Image (cartoon, rainbow, N blue to C red; front, top):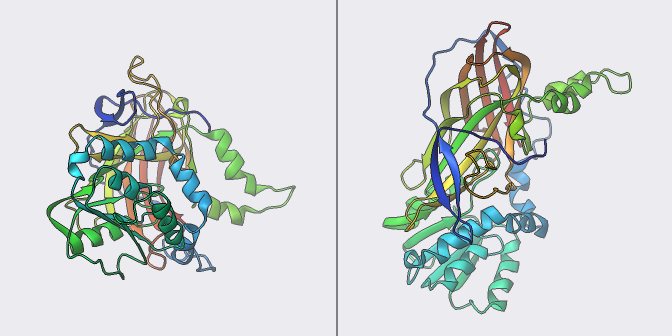
Length: 389
């Protein structure tokens, strides 16, 4: 799966983020509800999802951000980094003479953007050893009097000030909520943000669609059924429970895309990142469905002009409207189905998706998918469990 497109939804939200002032589009679709009963369960939500080695993302999360490679990938993500730069540079009035808190600052790039447009002071918090490098970067660029690097967890540090005017963070993970950094941002908001202060970005939305993906499913999942003549299907059971992060070709899309969940980071409560939502995906052609695909967008709605970006590429799907969008390092998240669904145009796949932090490793994400399909050529009802780690 290596092409750049994903969605063709009916209404558009225009985002401003590119240098040439051209607009990208992402689309919004209303959620339809359904009441479902499921006949078959794939795996167990607790036992099957907890591996014997408990040292997963909960243990290595901060350590992973000590290595420059992950920061290189994020900084070279032009859609991500250029959006933040444009939000700050083109809306300097939101930052000038303000006290800013940068949550999870990494190399300090967002703090540098804020300092450059005249922030009164920026407190940049980073738990990994990259904080030491960020301090050096700040010094080399002449902003030591404006940017203070604080090494530690947001939940454990104390700021030199009682309140901040703006909280900025790039907290989004794969599948939007992987790594659970959103709750850290909400903690900082509740503790330090002045009344009517700004959280940036302030909106995030998660979408779902369905794809045909026979070749890749055979390569990644069914491969384990016979490995050089040996049965390794026990690994297949685990592999299908691990969502795949990859770029999906628009030609694989079989159904409409549906908005699952919109989060208002300025108002939502801690814990709201766990949710259960219904979905209804309607086939746009006769085809097979092998997987569901999730992607997200984020918005900065307090800017002079609406700005943001999507983790889905839009390439000429609206009669050439807008420039070609680049893929982001978040790509898309693919959830392979146990069933192969033969679906006809107009038929609907319905179900619910439950998303919650893993109880033992809160930075991991547990996903429960319930789906029901009653088509002319195929019927299925199943529950599947996935874990991102």
